[in-house]
Image (cartoon, one colour):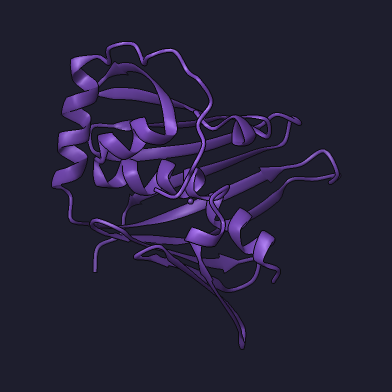
Length: 197
């Protein structure tokens, strides 16, 4: 698996140097701050996932499924079981990809263009409001019972390829993560209920 493919796979889950000049973020609803508090209180999670990638260059969407594990504040593990076993682990800014006997280890600091993808998921799971605001213009809608979080990249270079990351859920449970690209490609990660040990 190439480094680029590995990074895109995780995206489908503090090193930026330049930000586009953005207008100040509008005040966010009180429900957003409460959501961040609830998410920050969760120390771990283990859920099933299904991911669908729709790309113009492919005749049919690519679908995968498996398990996603989270340990606060920064360990995220994506175990793809179908169609082929693969494991991606993000821990302390290091991404490790394992497919069969092949392993790739990447320091995310060397790939600043990928950090916002990672932070859109990691920072939301951790309830890290400051990190979300660092990388994205935040648009929160709904209430705790049913919410949507629309994240638009602040970095101009990233915004040229990624239009928006949208997460939705109920209280401290994230149900979907959608990444829409400027070229029309789209990925949708759907998270299932908590898997009990």
